[in-house]
Every structure is written in C-alpha cells, then in structure tokens.
Length: 494
Image 1 (tube, rainbow, N blue to C red):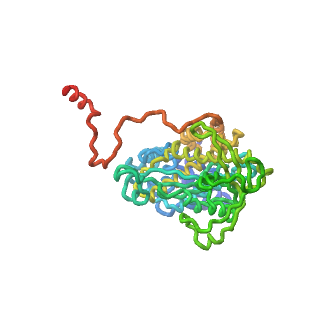
Image 2 (cartoon, rainbow, N blue to C red; image 1 turned 90 degrees about the vertical axis):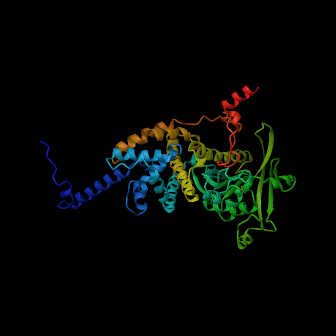
Image 3 (cartoon, helix red, strand yellow; image 1 turned 45 degrees about the vertical axis):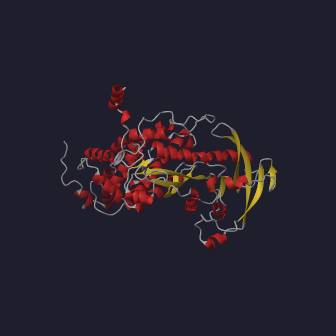
C-alpha cells in the first residue's frame, strides 16, 4: 500500500536531526539548481562554468522571464547556432519553459533584446576570466613548444548596423559614400595557441593601425610565453616592453622598413641564415606611440636580437625569403629550423579568427549601439572559449593536439545533443555517462591535415548579378534595363 505524503518536507526541516536537515537543504538546493539549468548548454559547460559560480556572481534583481542567467544561456545558444536571430533565441526560452512547466514568454523578441543590453559587463568579464582559467589549467604538454606557451596577436574587423551611434564611434570606410557603407569595428586580439582560446581584445576604428592597440594587450602575456606576430607589431617599443616588462619572448617577422635597410653582413654570424644584432632605441619617441614620456625614457637603450632567414612560397606560388626576429638567442637550444617552423604556427590565429567570423558568423553584428557591439563581442568570445574547453577534453580523449580537432564538427555535436542534457539535470551519474558518450563523439572529429595543399584567397561561388548601392537608398534609382519590360521595349523600338 502506497502512503499518501502529507506535509512533504515538514518533518525533514523541523523535527528531523541535524543530518537530515542538511540533506533536505542539499536536495532543495539541487532541485533549484536543476530548475535554473534551463539550457542543456549549462550542463555541458558545467565543468568549465559551474552553476554555483554563476549564482554567486549573477546580478542582483528580480528574476523575470528573461533573467540574467536565462538570457546568458539563450545568447550562448544563439551564437553556437551560427549567430541566429533573437527570435530564435526567444523560441529557445519558450521551449525550455514548456518543458519545465514554467510560464512561457511572448514570441516578441523586444523584451529579450532589452534584457541582453541589461547584462552587466562586469558579470560577463568574470565569466570570461573563469572560462580562461579552465582553459589554462587543461593545457597538455603536447600543446606546448619546448615548455613555452604560444600566444599570437593580430587584428581583424566586423561590420555593424548602419546607425548614427555606430557611425560616430566606428566610421565606415573613407572611400565609401555616405549612406552606402557600414560601420567597421576594428579588433586586435591575443589568442593562446596552446589551447586556442581568445585571451584578450581591444576595439578601435578600422583606420587605426593594429600596432597602436598592441601595447594595451601586454597584460595578457606571462613570463616565459612566446609572443608571435606579423611585421606590423615588430617595433622597438613593443618588443622591448614584452621582453623587459612581461619577461616574455618574441618571434615576429622583420618590419618592412628594417627589411629594406637590412645588411646581412652586419652583426655576429651564427650560421649562413642566422645573425645576432643589436637594436638601439630610437632617438625620438615615434608619433604613433601612446607611452608616457617617463616610461619611454625607462626603456633599455639597446636590445639584442637574433635574425633568422627562411624561405617560403608566397600566394603567387613563387619562392621568396623573409627574416624573423626573436630574443631567443641560443641556437643550440632553439635551432633555426625549428624557429622557422614555429613562426608558421602564427597562421593559427588567422584560423581562429576564421572560426569566429565564418563558423560562428561573427562577420556582422545586428546591433544599434557601440555598447551592445562590445557586449556582443564579449559574448562571442565567451561562447568560442566554452567551445574550446570541450575541444580540449575531446583532444585528450583522442590523444591529439587541441589544434588538430575540428571546431565545426564539435560545434555540430554540441548543438545536436544539448537538449538531451536537460533530462539528466540533478542526476550526476547519468550526466557523467551522457557526457563521456558525447566526448567520444567529439573525439572522432579530427582535422584532415594536408600541409602542402594550396588554398588561394579566391571565391568560386559567384554573387548575384545585382547593382551596387552607390547612393543613399532614398535617392538610389535602379537601372531599368535589368527588367524584362525594358528588354521588351527595346525589341519593339528596334
């Protein structure tokens, strides 16, 4: 005979022992956490972003249909689905609420969009820092280079909606007519190539040189890191500050101005392709430098560097030579051939930006203000770094380097299986079984590395034969000869 429960939970909290009261409190807290795990993604990414951490740092305020945690996970789902529309994000929330028997919000996306704008930047920064800590802890020895963490710096850009606020902060290209272009937000970022995540970024107008923003990202370099960059970042100030202030190392392509004046006979010869040279501090601080005068004076008067000449094949298929610069002077500990191969790993940052812009659709932000553009960029990076945490575990499962795993393949596994994780919320054993099974599926998505495959920067698929918008849409007039009516009139006139 089944007994009907009366006053459920009452004896466990009032007349029970201290042990039973503690157990009842834990069960109640677990039920609450399970209810808050409205998204399956919160379960999948719980090893890197525990729910208790989110509860400890979430903004204070009344929980509504679009509370801070609900909006956060809906936004993550929206990004992982290929930067889907806000309407689809609302449909995610509606589906979650129906399953949990909670009040279902309206299909109107305006409330959700306003809720995205209310998410505090400090809250997102804490989440980003927590995810980066998880990535750093999980770096495997196979992902290091001779015990060094590899970090690369480079610039990219995204376009924004054509609004007055966006145009004022991030103007369109100077060669475009007013009303015919889109605001362009420049981004300079540091990517940790040892785990693939984005560690920091700065935004600027597209006309501002990447090297002007680079010193602001020095805080993301730690002692012993190897900072790699193209020739745009190969300046005396940046290299000197990296080596002296951050105790990190550099590996960069020689700047074109120094390359033009390069005399291979100068310096101390190590081998036919290596030289030890000494750079002297410029007599006058460059105009583009934002460093205070006292800090500029504190820079060392000279720095000793090593040149390595290496051959490569340019995009035209022609053989060419370039010179890389490094402060790693020991040719026995750091052979020239290995340093040349290592510099080629700098291209990985371009691949990571492609993952963000093409795979996660970060090329265009449908936002009306710069503040929301910054917030969207932060969320894109959080979503990408969360994806990289799963890639790290999949790489360990497969016994591979993390950069050998497929971002698109693992993203497809996550987006297709996240709904199943809501079923095991609050059930640790079932969650562990389902999570291990998902990791095995992710471990199968390994890149097919083809080192000598030539991939020219060209588009094969042709665009539609539409006119270019060369004037503001209110005054623009379409060419009528593109219509069938024009062709008929032309035949009649003939």
